[in-house]
Length: 232
Image (tube, rainbow, N blue to C red; front, side, top):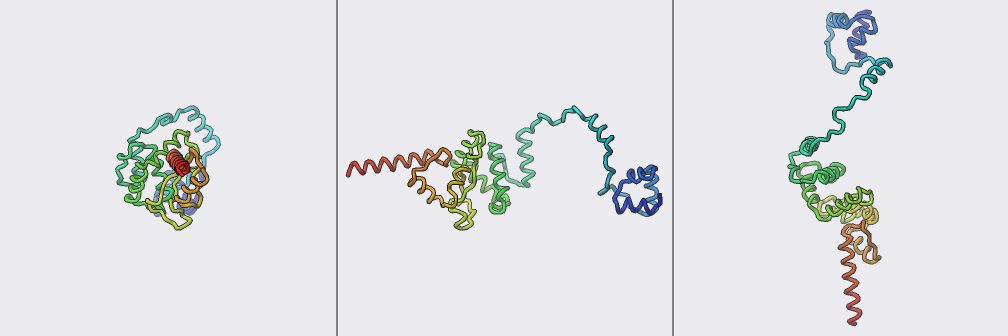
């Protein structure tokens, strides 16, 4: 064991002093004395430790086998989760004004997924949360999704009233939620085109947003038409 070999392994290969000592059959105190004598700075940063031997791995496995994880079955309370979310978002938004935590988490995931379009500032995120957390249409779809066991067909999917294919527009006034199924069906149509298509083709489904209102509207139009025919 030479001082050149020790310095090379410690400075270039980034070995630990114990690993170097093991290679040369000595102890790490002697390795340290050699390094100090050579004027090498002693640091633990970015050290490459010796790989675990099969025997060592087996020993660890035998000791830990059957040991119950300390956090198994333990769930953080809601306040802890809210603090974690706030810290991760690095936000000053008061999240306590949105009492339904799962719904809040869902909307936050949407803002994170589309942050390039919606904006990542507190002002932009709060505007999105304020608009949709209390939005009747979104809540109707979200509740249906929950009632359906979070079926993908009912998944609340963000949509553009004026299709993004007719010009990229992520203004909040141009955004709405639909079920995933309806969003796929609407495709590139604008909202007014889609509503007219449903009426003209008598297309309806429980998977459509506001399906009840749409049916009532269609019934009203039908009744008005029948009345007009009879009067004529």
